[in-house]
Structures are given as C-alpha cells and as structure tokens.
Image (tube, rainbow, N blue to C red; front, side):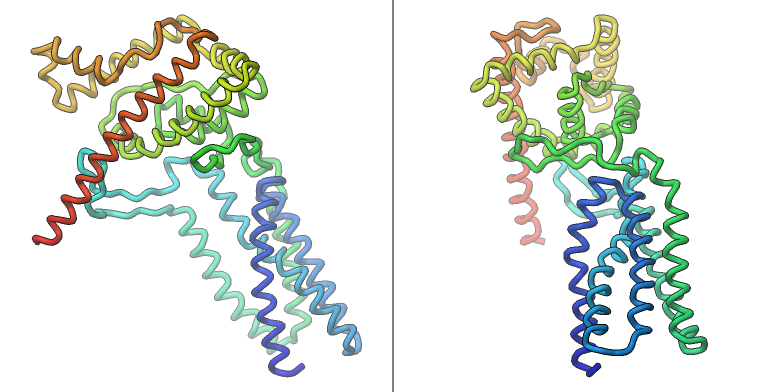
Length: 383
C-alpha cells in the first residue's frame, strides 16, 4: 500500500463518523442507548474478528477491497458504542442536577454579565474519563503490539468489545434507557418541538416538588397522555422560594412564547374542525382536578401569591387594598365566566383571552429588553 492510499483509507474512516452520528440518533430514540451500546459493541467485536481473518489471507486486490469494506461498515458501530454513555447519563441524571449557568440578572432578567458558570459535572466527568482511558490504553496497546505482535492486541480488543456488551447488558432492563416512549407531535408548532429525556414519573416527581420543568416538556408529555386517554400531569404551586421564583421568572419569556405558539395553533385547529373542538374539550375537562384538589390548590396559590408579594416589597398593598385590587385586575383580566368546566360555546373565547394576556406580557418584556439593550450600549460607550 502506498503512502497516499494509506492516507486516503485513514481519511475515509473519519468520514464514516457522519453517517454514524445520524444512525446513533435514530437508534437511541427507537431502541434506547443501552441496547445501542450492547449491539454496537457486539458488532465491533465481530468486525475485528472479520478483519483479522481477512488480514490472514494472501494479499490480493480482492482481500484489500474486502478489508476496507468491512472496516468502513464496522467503524460506525465503534463510534456508537463510544458515544452511547452520554445519552445514558443524560437520561438518568435529574433535571435539576445536570448543571446550569448562573448569571447576574436585573429585575427584568436581562443578562448584564456572567458571574459564574457551572456546566454539567456528570458529562464533564464522562468526557474526562473517556479521553484519559483513550490516551492511556492506546499507548499501552501500541507498546504491546510492538512487543507481542498486532494479532494479540486485536484479540484483546475483541475481548474488550464483548466484555463491554456483557457489562452493559443489564442496563437494557432499566426503563429510562430504553426506547423513547413519546413520539414527536404530529402537529408542527411555531417553536421547535420538545425532546423529553426523562420518563413521566420523573417529570411528575419534579412537579410534585414544585420544581421548574420547561413548558414544552410538560406540553409534549400531556399531548401523548391525552391521545391515550390519560389525565394531564398535575402541577402545584408549592411554598414560595425567592431562588425558585427568580429561576422561573428568567425562563418565563421562552415559556410564554412557546405557550402562545401552542395556543394559536390549537385555536386554529378547533375553529376549523368542530370534531377536534369536542375532543379537546373532553381532554381538557377530563383532566380537571376534583373539588377537593381544586380547593387545596386554591389555598396553596393564595399562600404563594401572598408570600411573593410580601417578599417583593409590595407591603403597600396592606395599606391600600384598593390600589392592589386595581393593579391585580388589570394584570389578570377575566378569561371566562368562571367555573371549573370549559364549554363548547366559550372555549374559543377562552383561548383568545389567554392569547391576549400572553401577547400583553410578551410585548411588555420585548419593549423592556430593547430599552435595556440600548441603555447598556449607551453606558458601554460612555464608560
């Protein structure tokens, strides 16, 4: 083999990463990262065995072509086995433990500067271990190949591949590492669709603790549950916490944008298709909590709102309740005639009123953010 042919063959191995990335995404969704890891390690082991056999034959053009063919078809499986640990860790790590970026925000959540960045420790540790072992064992295997020959090293690689498949085999029985339960929504939204990496039980557990979950993930799960005749996930206010409230507030703009896109699309569908309106009403009213649950939620909401207002400096409302009532009524106008059940005659008006409310808050946030950007730019020029 000439030097140019060797370079070309080596370059083509790198090119196989492109289809391998697409295949890995498909496999992780359809059969899960655990099964993908086991399968990829088994195929990698058999690929090395096939390469050892072909290399033992007399060197001909046919054996050369066969060697490259097996090498190129087997390389994607090696890639899949290497990258499968990332999605597995992402699925089993709780959402609030995956790491986040902490920034200094003003009261309108406009980022002024970074004070601290703390990205996912789990994924960082995974990458560090992977790179460390790759660097060390490639050196060790190279020394062994020089001393004992390449055949022994290749057989060791076969053993490692099969051993890895056996070690990861028990993980296929863990539900979170299996195929994705929820399919993508059939209706395309204005915003990108959600990708849920947790099972419903984990999301519900976070909601029970009144912890933040992105609206797109809640919507995505509820859509599938409604299609299967199941009630929506249950959320609660929980006890007021300034830290939790600041986190929700800083993420509220994207959540409100997503909800507005969802409401617009939903309003269009039920207006054009009366049957869809009936199905939507059945799903909406069927997921309503009972009288006792509603009463508990109302008491919890009252306590949360009261604690939030007091902690945010609205002590003036205690001295001037009339002022507070006026401000509150303007901020939260009437959505419907009241009651726990939506009606077929009033459901479109309900959605329209929700859209108006979302538009008011989003437009206000957009104007405030624009003024803050202009102000920040002016301060930077005069500094």
